[in-house]
Image (cartoon, rainbow, N blue to C red; front, side):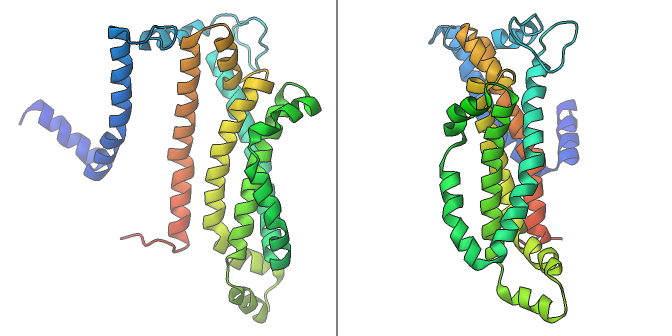
Length: 286
């Protein structure tokens, strides 16, 4: 047996054949994109001012260690503006908005969905609020709060709260009333109904809304940082584009995509899958 075959068998045993096949298939589009990107550098189909080389983008990581005039980061190390500062600033806003927006959206959505009359009254409000992109609120947010953390946080909260509220409300309203009546008939309280009927019944819808809200909220945050922020990845992209540092723009876009893909792949998607399996909406083979 050759060394290559031994390595291949070891990898298959470690990851599993199906999982390894899924990883390889998922990697093909990105490998093709990288290949075309490198080919553009070699054959110069488009000049570097439009599409920089992979090497220039890689070097931009180290260039961003230098001083950034006019930028006041959240964390300073030896008076240098680090790439990690932009990342921590954006991720910090996402975490703060999620801590505030998710619980309030779920709580108010459940309360509204418990009453069919109230939920039908508020449903158009939820549709109206979700139909307005978070980016559309940026000009007003700048007028109200100025440029900075509050503006970007407001945009994130506006996106996360309404998506969570709407999905939670519809999830609760989809639960059959007979389950609520059964708990009340057996002497249960309204809290028992929420805990044992509405929350489990609406959980798949809640988790789906959570995944959607974090996706739309992340995009709204980047746009808000470009226009009304003073730090973060969106701010870095905007200032780099103004200075024609295209390699830094590409780097920012790649980092944004990688962060959200990792969050969705390793946090939100498993949480959604576990939820629908936990409450019996799909069958998990043993």
